[in-house]
Image 1: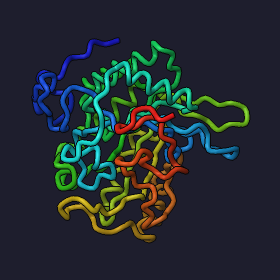
Image 2 (image 1 turned 45 degrees about the horizontal axis):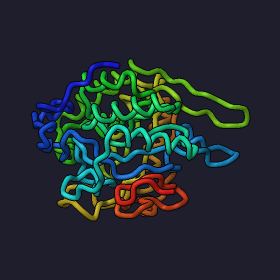
Image 3 (image 1 turned 120 degrees about the vertical axis):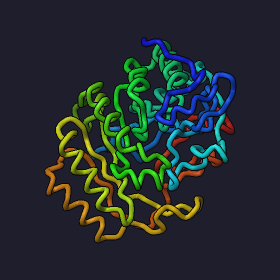
Length: 329
């Protein structure tokens, strides 16, 4: 295992805020060096190779760990209750409890351990996952992130992560500045995704009568924003040029106008015409490997509420641990 530097000062993410997080100073991410977790659940809303879903049933589901805090800060974030430090939902856990949570998810039948938005907590998470593996964790570990990550931080995950699930939010610096306060996002994300492709190649496991499970590799996700189709076209063109055959694509149309925020985010849903236009680009660019979300405008049933023991609808999620209650039997 690679040596992991403490967050003192912290330069884990591209913000390079230099906060003394080991001394309980909060960084740009809103967190000190401790790992703060909001919930852990069996989540069935991810892509089929992650949940095990197929013709014979929903599969075991993805064992998600929702980490509090975020180094990017999208103004339309659906998880704003835990990503925005002004809300600060979650509870600090140590590596031993993190390991127990991972093992509880495995016992519950999870197909993998899916760490959501953990880029600012890499040292603590790597320690927790290492402890879980020492305690009997056999599942692949997924890194579900914004792709706003430094190469040296990604290298700390070499012995920890099997599958990378980066967003490719935009390659337009003006959009990145307006929505993420990060005009350098396109440059950072391009390099980060390319590094992930170097670190892991696509590999699936198949059991007779069951769908393929993704156990190694990269799946690039892109959320289409209303009124920003040229930016999505640029992302798809980039994926076709640099990732096709090496990664899966997950194209999402679930954008929901936020109730919070300052009015900067788009205030409408994707239209049918926008949806069909983007699908046409998949054919144009020859992108075949991946997944495309169905067009269901105005559906907000899947939006989480992390104040609730089960933040998601019961058909999507089975809670295993929550910051208010701890383990849920």
